Image 1 (cartoon, one colour):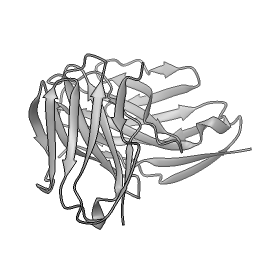
Image 2 (tube, one colour):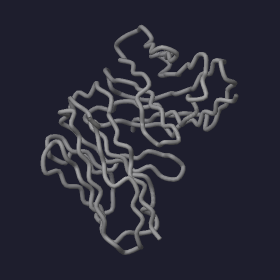
Image 3 (spheres, chains in turn yellow, cyan):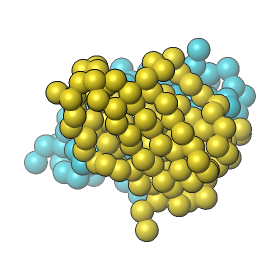
Amino acid sequence: DTAVSQTPKYLVTQMGNDKSIKCEQNLGHDTMYWYKQDSKKFLKIMFSYNNKELIINETVPNRFSPKSPDKAHLNLHINSLELGDSAVYFCASSQGGRLINQPQHFGDGTRLSIL
Amino acid sequence: AQTVTQSQPEMSVQEAETVTLSCTYDTSESNYYLFWYKQPPSRQMILVIRQEAYKQQNATENRFSVNFQKAAKSFSLKISDSQLGDTAMYFCASTSGTYKYIFGTGTRLKVLA
């Protein structure tokens, strides 16, 4: 009965490869997010989708492409991986996007390591 | 731009004692919400407590309470009777207008036996 689940938990790959991280939430929320947490633990918003529509895109390289097939899923595809992409990526969801008053619920994170 | 500032990168506290983590924020919103999240070494992000800005009463959740000073834009977290399991990174966060949450840089708390 996991609320926000993302897969895989760990991803180790070579520089230049393309990889995807999947996220699903069963909370009925209408807004989903991707965050990047770097080695200093700083949490930075990357994207946000509300009802499958992109609403936040925070100066992220276009090698990163989110896709939301429905409001319960938000996947992240990364092309041509670079060393600087090594981080933990968190998916999150919340309800009531425009007048947000609810906390976000987070997945367990995906640790991406680029060799 | 809206910001959330946590000025204490690291703190430590003896088991069973009380510790306060600081957070200040800057917002132009008239209504907003504030949160504290805990990230233990397992790296999960766990909601600890939340405060609605229009409520003057400070939120409390068991051993966790906040001191919300709206005029000073301060939102500190007090942990009473600290336990070893409280060892974690703590993030303060604020809602920011439409669809967005702003996080502070975190405070690493270590509870000592």
